[in-house]
Length: 368
Image (cartoon, rainbow, N blue to C red; front, side, top):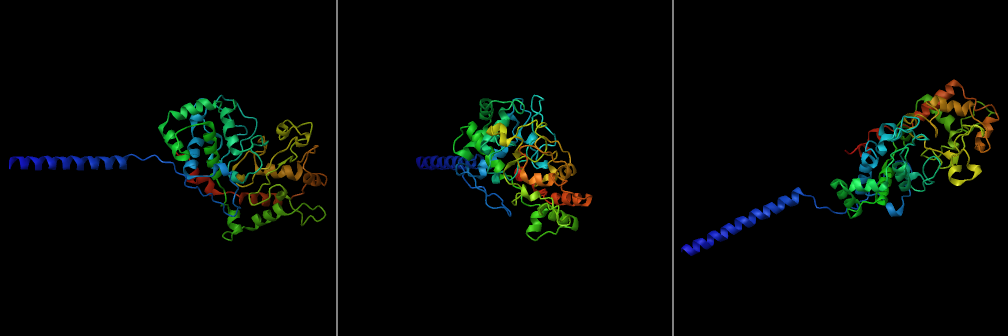
């Protein structure tokens, strides 16, 4: 009888221990995430824009975009750990800088105005003002290594990120292993920047029938899209759409927009990349979306206001050997001849291209 009770007691104890251990194991599984690769696709919001052509070797995934966002805001990418990509590309300014020339970690200034980062997925003709980076992934690593900007080596960046468990885990989720390399950093940054989209301005809503332009904005819209015609002043427009065409308000080309004469041209622009004299003074035509928020303007930030920009095209064009042919016509006919009301109307229309969602979208904000 005693042996029977002892046996029952031992069995009961074993059951209790087994049950306790099972519960403990369940708690471990709940409390500790199982690290897995996650290739869930990330869906780019296109609005009225056509579907972009994303590189087949770097399709956007939820975890890849998340990693790129972390890296975009990561100050460890700089030598002094005081600056990130977002330091010069601020969300509240359509991911550009308010300074004419951004200041790097050594207190040195860059040579050109920081370009806005949005709708990069629709860019199909190199990157930077002069197009020196073939793909966005190539562009993403250049500021890190530039002594005027973040002044850091890629080897140091990799070592710093390897020391962070959160990064090792996120590289695993995005790529399938914890391996951190410059290439993977560039691919993740490319994914995040391609995810930054601006497609919900007042003009977009006007186009889809959910907003109405007031009379001043409507006059500006006419001027923007109408061609310059000095023979019929009442019908003549500002011909902006020649360069700022498509629904993204750019044409992805490199053009000389009459900022300087040959003698005064301090920056060779595209010619620095192609070595073709025909490209001297040519720079990438950027999107006019969110132009209200991206001052100062032009590759060298010489214009502080939209009023200055409009006046440049109205009466300030400079002739040079590579000036775009469509600008030669107004230059030789006394300028665009816009009235003060016309200029106000044109600026009012340009402000309808502002997308407030871009400035506040938490998907693009600092994750830390």
